[in-house]
Amino acid sequence: MTKRKKKNKLWLFLLPLLLLLAIAYALIKPLYETRTAITLQPLTNSGPDITLPENGESAVTMQGYKTVLTSTNKAQLPTASTAKVITALMILNKYPLDLNQQGPMLTMTASDVEIYNSYVALDGSVNKVEIGEQISEYQALQAILLPSSCNMSDSAAIWAFGSLAAYNTYATSTLKQWNINNTVVGTDASGFSPSTTSSPSDLIKIGKLALNNPVLAQIFNQKSATIPVQGIIKNVNILLGKNGIIGIKTGNNDQDTGAYLFASKNNIQGTNQTATVVGAVMDEPSLIEAMSSSIPIINSAISNLRVIDYPATNQAVGYYSVPWSNSHYQILATQNYQQILWDKTTLQPVIKTKKINYLTKKGTVVGAISVNNHTQNLILNEKIPRPSLVWEIKNIFKF
Image 1 (tube, helix red, strand yellow):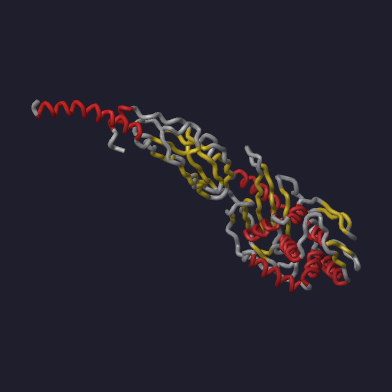
Image 2 (cartoon, rainbow, N blue to C red):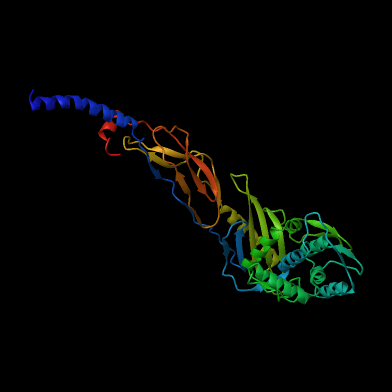
């Protein structure tokens, strides 16, 4: 037999063997992994667009959000009786109360009667007191915040801190600790004196702190109460309960004829959640105008809430692809995550996916998505088909 014939015979033996080896290799080689593409884009919210009143100075925000919209905002304006919210916060900071606690008793003295008489002479808002009267801390706060008692503001501050000067020192220091830097505590604790000044944006900070105190939040929302000597007292906040308003405090004096620090709790349409608007109006021509201007501010603030599902259940966040198919195999979110946006912000989803292959079943968890610290699973929407044997053989050395 010639060498040529031997070589041909060898190839006839080797070719089937090589083909069998190629097929075996194609069958047992590593499963081809998919390529991943993320299609879910970051979501940008433009933020609120609100027209504030032309008169006076104002500001508005939403409880739980960072954005505070302000008007031209003069540096400082007399607070009038909105200062009483500061007084109440300071008293509770010194002598905290839990809900349904009356707290320690204040005993009214001749000095407290003198304070009462002095405010009567000045035509300030007052509640009557008598020497020897016993009134609880909680009742004193009701007198300060509901009928806006100037004399009880000073009497309670003196009870808590020893003197109005000591109150001033304590309140000034505490406000700085709370990063409320554009507010000056004046010579009294009532705001009757124009020496207590602030800005709408600072009043909003004060109002948000007060709303976070359950005792103050409860009192703000009371239409009336009963206290010793004076008897029934009524809340001067005549808008309470209208347009969702849950407080906080009115104010007017000769230097600031219309001030209103307000909060309004509203249902968010299409959700089971609520949102609380916190706003402040200062330097309006009258208290009625200040209070009236709060309504369009509230309505505008609520209308700027954006409710979206990001991601929504079964929303595609990306897909897998394979070189043997032109189809895309979607990666889906498993839950609906409702976002309520008000601030100017961009939601940046963090998406992590696993390496899979054609043996991975439909519905398998293939990764996770995180938005605003909320994490949920991602699943494969459709099973990836196995490559054909012909394709595998053709591409045997490409992978």
